[in-house]
Length: 249
Image (cartoon, rainbow, N blue to C red):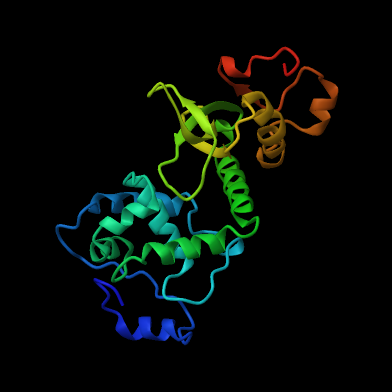
């Protein structure tokens, strides 16, 4: 069952398909847990909607680990800055289990298999759009002026051959993807567009960001006001020099 496994009955039932519901997280009082400080972020993750509507967009096959546990694991691995899921092979599974309220975390191959189930359809994009819309409507005063910026994210795995991007901080061309972030005035992120092949900020704004903003942004002004004043705008985009284009403007 793996190192750190203690819930033998539930794991045995899951292995033969007899576990009707995944095991729910149950956090216990413990001491000296490595990376335990990440639990301070759990209330923030819950308030931001990490588990609120996820069941509407993702479905997992029956098993020991449920959707809630899987999303918490992925969020925590990002917060502790693990470069890849493979890094979990060198972490104590029982200690990580205490962080997610279970006896141990899944094996890396199990985790990859479940992530593959989540990404087989368009659920991740729909979930991202739903969260973006909810965040913007909950803070409309922050969503009228949006800051767009691109960041190169270096790929550290070996599972795929991504195109090379110039990484300015290392002055090298490395396998990477480009993330285009759309942030509020105070820096809080609303959404991110990931591009393996980067067409440039202008194309991303035209083809990805603007169509999604038109659906997600609350109505600051009515359609009648927009029709009456041709210079009235629904929102303002703030970008750096990469977006400079007289045709776009």
